[in-house]
Image 1 (cartoon, rainbow, N blue to C red):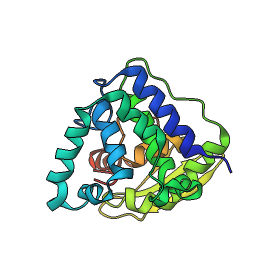
Image 2: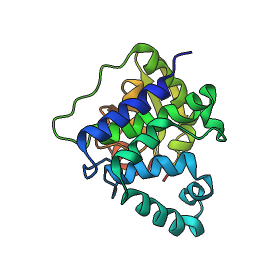
Image 3: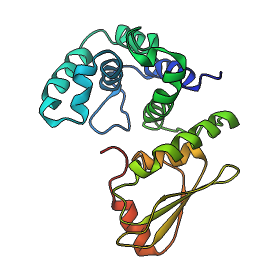
Length: 213
């Protein structure tokens, strides 16, 4: 079994150490130490991680994230590198691959693409395929707030209807699976995709909030 999630985790950790604790990321309001703390909480403190979706726990989550981020940065990154604790189902390879591939791919790119002079990586075909499979599975959720219909086209991988038209017509979003994933998860400013459709529909999509937000 190819462990793309593990590879992206390790590459992200290397990048976090390379750029240091105060480097910007594409996660709004977070620098690299904040991102590392988020990843540790996500895997090691599920009682707090639910604060991402439950507003009444958000304050506790943010306080713990800030506390972790203020500590030893190198040790924090090594906690990310170590992976989920043994009691967490994400500790197991198959669960890790399903639950963490997109998470670690996106956050790796969040760090890379916030630095000057970045360029897209030349990703292996099997990683692109895995990202395409993951995107097809999550696309309806990611594009649920789009005011337009969405058709995703990844040359060499296929096309997928992510959302039926709503207030507007349909926009075709074309790119590699990696770039489509970044666009779907709200990294529109750095995702290298091509949009085709009515100009008003494209403008409406570009203003929409995508991803889990």
